[in-house]
Length: 107
Image 1 (cartoon, rainbow, N blue to C red):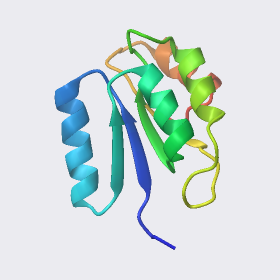
Image 2: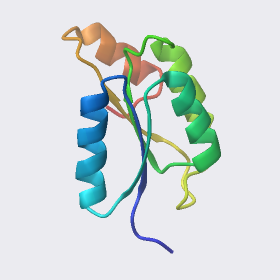
Image 3: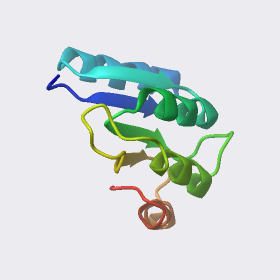
């Protein structure tokens, strides 16, 4: 079995998306990326990532829909369910954090 994780990164900030992908790839992980929530959900269903890093402020989706759809993705490549969802946000409001954790994010 492959010991590297398959990461899905979803962010509409292309510079940040590329930087995160480069860092994770350099550390030996496999990375797939999406710049829209819709594309991210599709990739989660098709590629079955182990971990998703998701910007919850995407223009094409709202946070509960996006996180709920990602949680319903099939099991990750290492056999674990996609329960590892890390949320990114530029919002300084704790409301965003509270909503994300209530809707399935791990942090």
